[in-house]
Length: 181
Length: 181
Length: 181
Image (cartoon, rainbow over all chains, first blue to last red; front, side, top):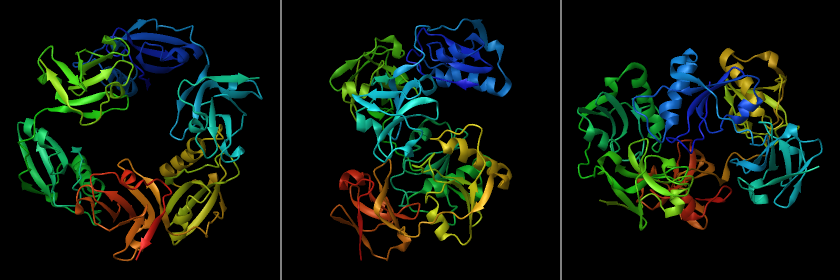
């Protein structure tokens, strides 16, 4: 049972949903947060969450709505009295991979939205006008040198061994990344 | 059992106390941290914590003193051998509501010390020379627009839908907030 | 069982080790992270971790290698089938104490690498061209005044009562600290 919340429309018209994808349950807003989960799953079922707590803050459904549902599911299995079958909203036009920096971590490593396994062998990445070669791990390049590597989540990530890629390249969330064959 | 520590006087003359307010136990410094809890409770009892650990850092009573007491209480109920009845120091001159920004969260939302339920209907708030209308939740205003709303803790909070209120208004902890009838 | 990871060489040639020092187990990289633990222990034994998971990210041994070993040890005691006896790499030239700022905390307190108990009574510390006297705890000096004190980990720490030592002195990790007899 996974509870996930990225929810700028909290308290508005977007629906609250549960998704079963390949045997896992996802609880959260129906705003596309589960799109890639659904797209890559073999089997998908969806439900509206019809249960409501006694007190529901319009700005914190993570606490008041999603968490109690996820807790109930985690403890006793899915409680169908809380749900009503529905079709999850799909966002088929969204890309499978996003050629941008999607996250900068505490150390300045810049994660892209590109799956490393979806990139051809020998590919280089270009960010901020510079070209970065692939490496296997940080210590494969000299301290201070940049590389991209398949990070522990399977995504291509720009990094500097013993340094900060965000500072070295001026990267931030949304910076474009180009794939050089 | 709640352990709370905001404790600039740690290791100094302020007492270490336990408070029972409406059936809940609070463990921490006797510096006013529990003033509003006591003020709003129907029944209040207080104790000095007379128990001392073998080793007590003068700068970290949260770890060395309060945590063991709270853990003991949480596991086996209040242990009166650790306590001696006392009157908690009261701070009656402190206001019930504080017309200031008291916290800025990770997303730039600026929480005030004003209870939303204590504000008349239709009230607007003024911060940094600008006037903000009330909304129910973020998505009730256009992206980039500001509003104030009753946050999930019951306090009035200044926010910008899909933006940062702290940056938009130049707000920081201590910025004054005015109530416009 | 302690899992510790500061591991710039992750996925490279450094070994993965387990150390038993005075009855405690430490799991992590063989890069000196356990040097001071070994140096101060009465008895030390070392092992290479020879177990490998099915899938091992070259950049996240904390998750894929060290955590499963530590979890196994924590649940059922050390599993010698995962280990092979070895000598841990020692770094005997490293100092016992480091006269530098080694950490700046959330509040701007600047921790040195000097054990307070290793400093003579009455010692003053000099940082950034200024001299700081010892105090027992924050509230022993006036708000806004600086002092050094034995922090809750036993290290000398530069602090300003109700202020930020990092800002007041321009301190950052690596700033030198001098001991004035």
